[in-house]
Length: 270
Length: 84
Ligand SMILES: Cc1ncc(C[n+]2csc(CCOP(=O)(O)OP(=O)(O)O)c2C)c(N)n1
Ligand code: SF4
Image 1 (cartoon, rainbow over the protein chains, first blue to last red):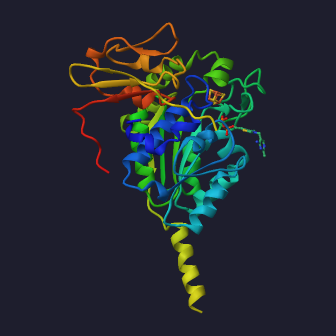
Image 2 (image 1 turned 60 degrees about the vertical axis):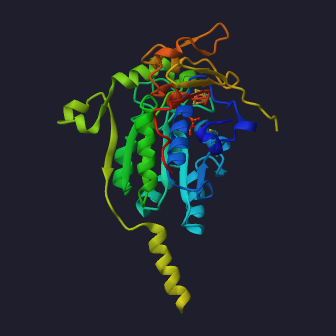
Image 3 (image 1 turned 30 degrees about the horizontal axis):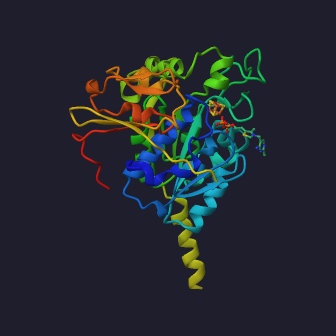
């Protein structure tokens, strides 16, 4: 078929994909594929890695090097790939449960090491694949199948956590703002070091239904009406109750695989 | 592995803008219909998206970018292909 991005998709044997109608993961995948296609990279130089979950199904539909690993272990697997082949662009795409619950420690330590990964964290505020259990990002008071009266736990602020753990690029977008999201992914891919993009997404089948948020369209309207770009935030109260989107943090720091390479060089000269 | 054969329904406007819809991939979520600024699309009786007013399309391809199912593609001859 004559589509620009067709060469990056396994169109002839994997589609239509298994995600529910209106699921935001598809839109995030769409933005990622376009970012890859618009980057000047050869598809053999890119590896997309995931764990387990609805979000982690994405690599199955992408036609470049891909690796669908174990639940929570997307980042450890990506670490191995990056250290074995530092010239490759390694992208991790997984859910909030995968990257922040079972894989939470891997996330903060990869950020601390500043390994050159692009992490696309699809935050749909619950465990979609296993039936809508609450996750570390479910806001306090919101329902999950394991929190029928509302979650009593406080949620993580993903971006703040990535920043204090040592990430050099931290950004947020939503599945309503897909052109914006695509731009952020391109920026993150170019960035040398641990780059995190939180994608505020919708799971209309579980989280949306349990919390009476309406269908996918209603959820996207909510994201449209309640988002504010980081440049519009003049004082802290502007951001209250809003989803702040854009590049939230950027800095420079020595990258892990480069530092590690120096150690290898020293050891091999002996 | 099952082989699918994407067979898009293609419509072309006088402006040269072309919309292709792959019905086999569309799940009828309605995101493209709702957020099209020009009301070019509508869900049909087949519960899939249909192009009902191609002449109004401004070629911004927001539907293509938001579609979670890779079911709609817009070709706009005025937009230059992004250089690799
Ligand atoms: C070691 C292990 N524990 C638990 C599970 C069950 N499990 C599968 S997916 C999942 C959570 C997925 O949630 P998330 O990562 O947020 O992805 P989503 O489905 O919401 O996109 C869990 C707990 C598993 N597969 N392996
Ligand atoms: S269960 Fe939720 S996250 Fe999983 S595919 Fe369906 S809508 Fe998407």
